[in-house]
Length: 130
Image (cartoon, rainbow, N blue to C red; front, top):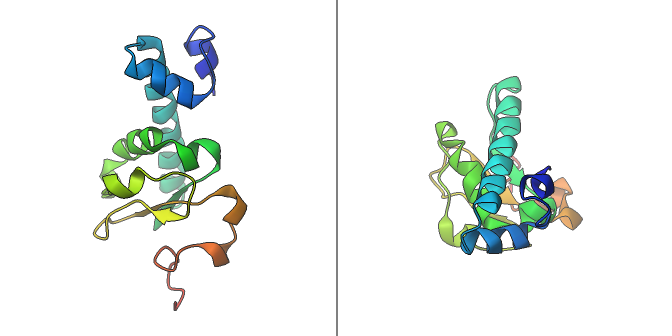
């Protein structure tokens, strides 16, 4: 992701970067911001290529366990009408919808060990007839 180099070798672990940012480390803050922006750019590219999306899923280590990163990424995607549920977004490592019910795009956290479409929360599946 490049954050190790951006922080002059501080860490590539986002838990360490978030702690350093909270302690005033500007390099860590910048690395988190750049990473979040890059993720949002990729999502935006896919949204354009697919002519819109119904849902966005965060998964894997950072997606499952970094509420700050999810908040920052979603913040760049405001044009999609996403509304983040801050209390839900505070969770870590579990299947959950983190967007509000009135969000135009659903946003979910899906742990990597349960990425099968059958494991998605019913409210997340599109036209599934749940």
